[in-house]
Image 1 (cartoon, rainbow, N blue to C red):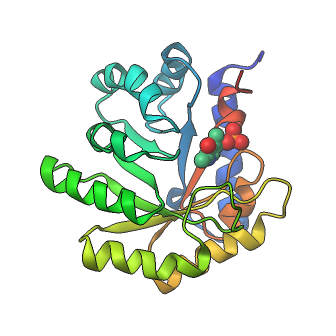
Image 2 (tube, protein in one colour; image 1 turned 180 degrees about the vertical axis):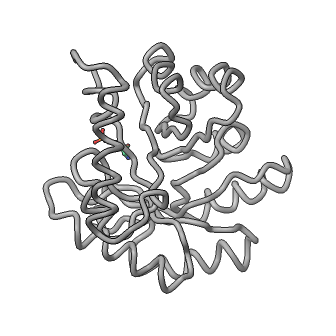
Length: 222
Ligand SMILES: *Cc1c(COP(=O)(O)O)cnc(C)c1O
């Protein structure tokens, strides 16, 4: 890309602010999660220097290679796990991430509950909902979301502060965003992580509090 990070940042942040205003939302209520997956530390540093502090990664292993050093340099970074979490990585994930957006099945909820108790670290937790009920995709099914959230809260004593979704590729995203918003509302969940480079303005219209943007900030992933 010929543009600098700061130029792309200004563009994306400008669009977030404009969308919030257009849809009667406070721009300050929409958090930009910079999705830095696949990009090395030297590509992330310009984002940190440009003031970004909230980042999303989809792999625990890759994050462990990049983020401990960057977090030491920038202690106010907030790191989100936005990819699937395996139980055998739960310990490392709880130690490194400030937010785990992909609580998606009873087994991982139980493992996280045990690790949170053991470590005394409390990352914020979002439940991932498979709004399109796609067989290959992670996330709880929409019709199982209420029961899963209740189980996390009541039986495992986990605080669920958000929901996240990734709408099916090639489909209108708005019904999926609306479904996620409805599930959040009836479960008293304040945070909605939805919207990516291609559709974040629509997500803001439907109530996103967190938009996860990679390509529009960092360029195409190799
Ligand atoms: C990669 C990824 C994104 C960012 O997607 P872009 O289209 O590059 O903005 C957002 N959310 C999740 C879960 C991702 O894996």
